[in-house]
Image (cartoon, rainbow, N blue to C red; front, side, top):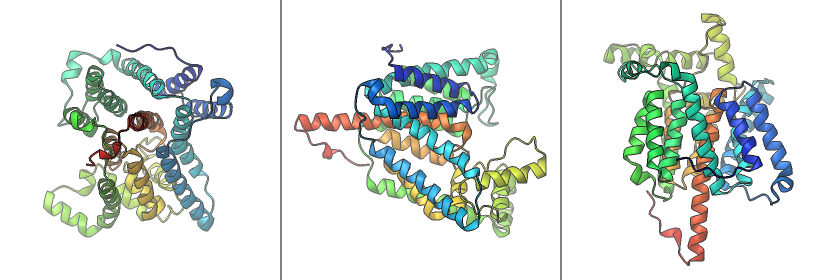
Length: 390
């Protein structure tokens, strides 16, 4: 059952913003998030009658990593000319982070847990609002893993995976099972497999132990090498070898992703940093398919990051997320999945900012519980450095 606790004024405003995200109120949701952040950051002492807490180092890491990308973007634009499309990217990257930084400043662990419980109900309502008329036994039976088909397929799969991680971490398996079921119904194939895997491995993942520096370093290397090698291999010789070996073109195997990457690489138009790839692809695909062609992203955020901000940008950006989540196995596993998904999908864009709000809330819970555990350990004379790294 949902634990009903008295909501604060800040919680009501937070929920209003998230309702706008859950039901997609266009650009209004961004304006609401920024207004919320400005009002409560500037007036938190008056409204909440408390001082701002120190910003968690995990948020500072991520904020620094995102800012580093925009520094690279600014340098490239000073060299090659100004293009305003990077401003949109700033909105998408900074909005969920600033939003949660402000909320976490005036919230404790119980507040964050409460708001996530309410958001869980909100997204269940969003699911039924979208699919109530289609939720029949016949449609459920029509779900096909082989054909990658579900009548309920939507981005909500990512949302319910995050809720599954949260409830597994908090030891609430019934809600975790509900999240898993809704994730499977929402059917993003990789997401669904990861959700099942996380549930099976939950006893290991929920252990409140940090991830070793070696594991963080190895993971960063993997996610930096992936886009680098992808760009190196995309050439005529490799494509010919691929066809001769597997009797299918690389274009077909990657669902046209390879051709988009090659088009961008050969364009000479991505010299302006963040936003360059999406802007170029929009023009390129509109020319090829007409202005009504909807899918204009590269569907590979790792390669896009590499092409827009270079190898240094990829290293810094990947490292800050891995390091920020290494405080806990569950958060680290979740962000590793997100980066893996970004090799096939587009999760750092306009349509996914609400997903990052939920990821940052998950990070808040893990960070707060870790810090509270450390404080309790110090008070009881316990040294938490005995944790065994993975």
